Image (cartoon, rainbow, N blue to C red):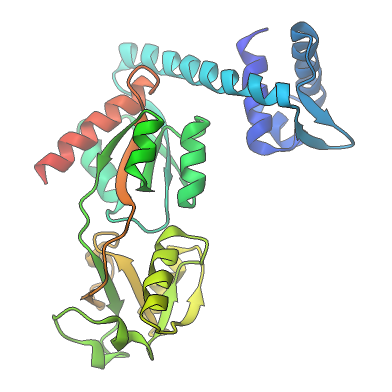
Amino acid sequence: MDIKQLIYLCNLERERHFGRAAEASFVSQPTLSMRLKNLERELGLSLINRSNNFDGFTPEGERVLTWAREIVSVYQGLKLEVESLKHGVAGTLRIGVVPQCSISLPLVLKGIQERYPQLNYRVSVLSADQLLDALNSYTVDVGIGFFELVTLRELHFQAEPLADNGVEVVFHPEHFPQLVGEAPLSLNELKEIPLCLAEQTRYFRRYLDTHFREADIHLRVILETTSVFQLAQGVQVGLGCLISPRGHLLPAMTPELQSRPLAIAPMSRQAAVVIAEPGRATPLSQHFFDEVRRWLSER
């Protein structure tokens, strides 16, 4: 058994397809299949359900995968640590984020850049539940989203809570002059307003739906998408208004738009930056996490 076989196994789990897993591993499909069959032969276990296509893992394969993820994570962390010793903190950090959170990710990354200019980032947009799964399976190094803090403690994650600045309604004053003002808007004031919102599978959208439903108010959702970019464009052209956590959008990007706070109960989940516990987190993610803590404390 060698580390490449375990990497191939983890790539197969992520891609759920032999051909894509081979591409992700930079080998041919026959080579990947042969190496995984050799692993099964060496362990004396059937790890993969095979038909004409990939058909999931056997129960034994799932057990082996748990160890493979951890071993691969430690191996990748070792490689990054060696590079850091040679060249300083450098490499590519895998970050998982939810579409709408209470902080602008690029603002955070810009704040970290001064200290660690050689860091690069690969960002995946996930649902809140997908994000926790990705952290558990080591397919992302850092998670930024909404979490149950009790669950994070039980799973031994490190978490740096983000300030909850409430929720805002973002609108174009030319198209929605009736919303211009400074006082918080009530839920009832939005019952006839067309809205641009994230899909219902997203935590923030479910949070909104719950509170509007409890207030017996039917939302008029004119644009629904997972793309924050499309939502922002919808607001820019006056298609509708956006409800978003305060701090998620950079006002300088849309100077024509205005916003007002929304009077709504706080979210039950906590916005936070999360990595694995000390000793399990990669050196790169630990450096990033510590710097995020410092940066947030100075803001």
